[in-house]
Image (tube, rainbow, N blue to C red; front, side):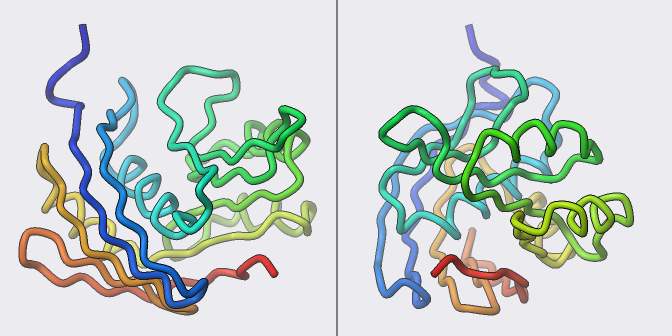
Length: 175
């Protein structure tokens, strides 16, 4: 039986001005057993940034290594992986070897170990979100989330619980 304190209903209305689409996503998701609220929020943000892809999956199952967001290819490998950085570059290396496109999402400032790892893995892109925005979304987290999201090339704005949170983002969008 699942822990009701970790289960959330998500109702996201996402306007993606980068990819010129409007997506409505309604799903039930769960925060993993050992997952911090910040990690959970970053996973949701990563999902919103790539919601224009209809093959995207917000992973909740336990895999080794545990993946956050994936889009699978027709042959079974990963066409895209979006992974939240949790101070473990060895897991990132394992994941990078299994995908053709990988994004690592983190908060500013970028961890020096991650910066070094990224310099060695130039094909991996990084998404940087302001720490204060993530913390504000953690404060506003409720069992039923209603987010109105606007994705721009260099910013992300979310309205949640009548609160407006806007953050700059640093991302190299796929062509």
